[in-house]
Amino acid sequence: MHKSHILLLFSLLFSSELYSQQTFPLSSYASSTIAIPVGDLEKAGTWMQKVFGELPTDEPAPGIIEFQLNEQTWLQLFEEKEASNSAIIRVEVPDINMAYQHLVDAGVQTGQVEKVPEVVYYLDFQDDYGNKFSFYELLLP
Image 1 (cartoon, helix red, strand yellow):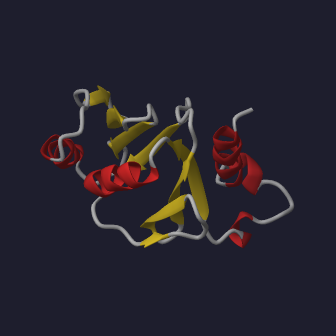
Image 2 (image 1 turned 180 degrees about the vertical axis):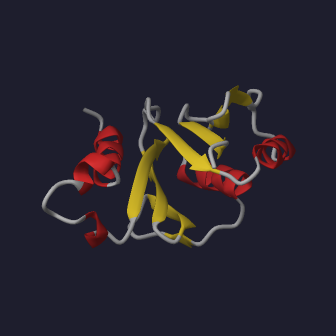
């Protein structure tokens, strides 16, 4: 299994309702980091800033950049020659139409906003390395 898939699965496991039913409390975890591979760290970092805006960043080790998406979530980029994976990073946004316009203005290739009636609007796009992203707006109260 690819190391980015392992990191993503680990992150999903510890944020899942299933894990919270185990003996070790989920509240013991202070944050989550989602790691994805990229072919050119500097270029990918610039792309991320275009998409997500100016975010707090950290370079914890050579060849790694981290972006703080919110108080508990970090997106980590690491350089790898074959930098594509099948994971999808989904980020909730308050207004899907504003998110769509932001991507268009930033020059990001994107599909149209899709709707699952009474559930969610979503918008899929990807970076230059084939990493998949999705913005979504929940329709449920």
